[in-house]
Image (tube, rainbow, N blue to C red; front, side):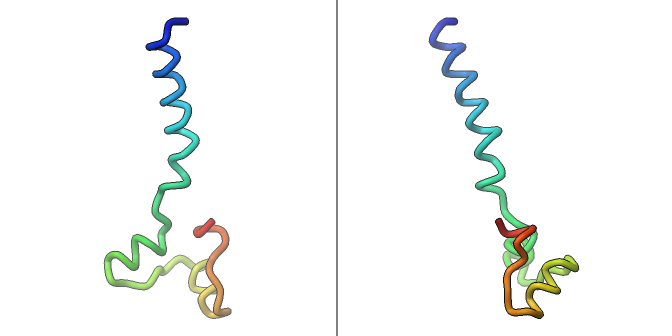
Length: 57
């Protein structure tokens, strides 16, 4: 395998694995729009004074 293919495969693997880490959660998107998140799990967690563990990893 030549170096170009190796670099290409490595960068694609990194992008697929790192994408969820850099993705915005539903709460972040709602906050950016100046709103509160309306997902049921997030509303329930906020009522308890917590952050939704499902959406905000």
